[in-house]
Length: 178
Image (cartoon, rainbow, N blue to C red):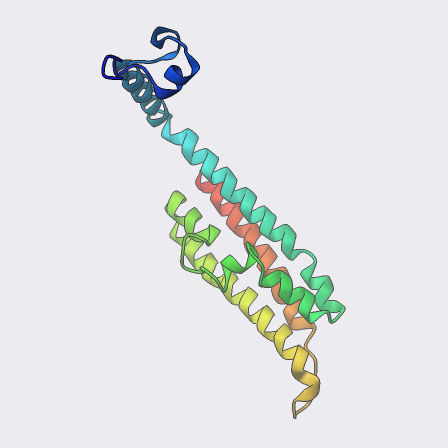
């Protein structure tokens, strides 16, 4: 093995092929790798930004589509069905898990667009979703609690619709900042 040059790989030795047929020397390997990295690094910033903006807008559209059945579930008094949607990713990233982290689409969108108003909208949206969930949760136990025993249906439905409207506002704001 000491007579084999450093361009020969173990697989070439075991397969019996010659080094010149299948090998790339170190200099060519580094050159090819450097050119590849530089070509990725020189991608125009606007192309990366637009792709990220589009993907975040699509993420918000997906969240809104997941929220669309919530008002109907609340009207049917299917509290756990509605809460299941609110507590499942990616919806829950907007209000109870990762509210102030990069899991929250509006946080990332605000950073990308440098629009502080998206952070304010994030807080308003989080409140709408949190109170909607809180009322739905309370409705589960209303029959077992002392007091008036009144189930709230109108309020969580309004909050779910408000949340979807706030998502539409965020999408419009993001598009206008582009």
